[in-house]
Every structure is written in structure tokens, then in C-alpha cells.
Length: 78
Image (cartoon, rainbow, N blue to C red; front, side, top):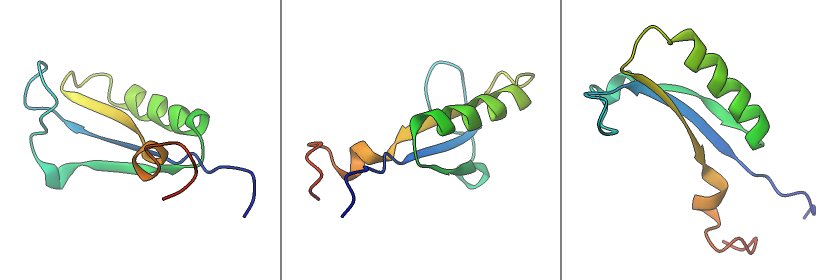
């Protein structure tokens, strides 16, 4: 196994019911942008999508640190 860790990040978004909480209007309409190998590339994709939807106040995009979900202890063991 390589010493290089994959720090996977998921970028996704959707239209919120209201601006006070993260509850999506329609889960079937979520925009799964992609999975990225590091935070920098995920942030670049997130910024691009957020900029495209700037006119819709209810549209929000998020970055999920998948590597933290896969390895919550951070010890490299699953």
C-alpha cells in the first residue's frame, strides 16, 4: 500500500426548503457533482457550482469529507 492517503471529498448540492436549515426540497433533484481526491480540487468544483447558481438563494452546494467517514479515527485502518 502506498504512503499517499486518498482524502476523498464529495461535492453535491440541491435546493433547500428554507434558508434556516439543511433540508432539501427534493432528494431526487440533488446534483452530485463528483468525488475528488483532495480538498483543493473539491473546493474548486464547489466554487464553480456555487457561482453558477448564485442567483438562486435556495441552492446550496456542500463538500463532504468522505475520508473522515471512511476512517473516523484517522489511523488508516477501516
